[in-house]
Length: 92
Image (cartoon, rainbow, N blue to C red; front, side, top):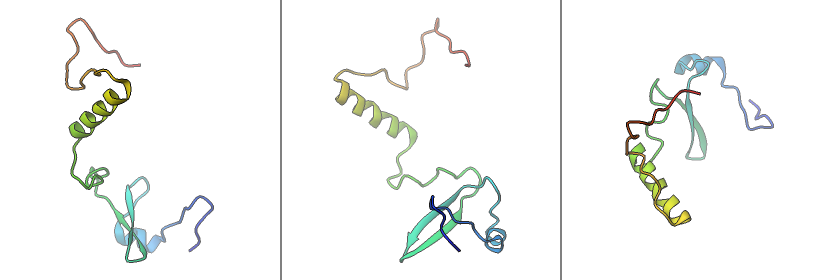
């Protein structure tokens, strides 16, 4: 197997079949003991476990809000606040 100019490799069909990897599936490539390990993520788990510290979306949003406040120097609207009753959001 060769690595292409963009770092791409083709997973051999026998391995894809054994791991039930189908076009569009999410996979994770990890370096383990000097080797590359590829594993398929079950449907719906594409982002699960990618944050080693277990932070959830709310934690990440809060951290980002604090970073923006430090950079800008003023509080930013909280993502948890709801819109005023007279404000609507229409799809683009």
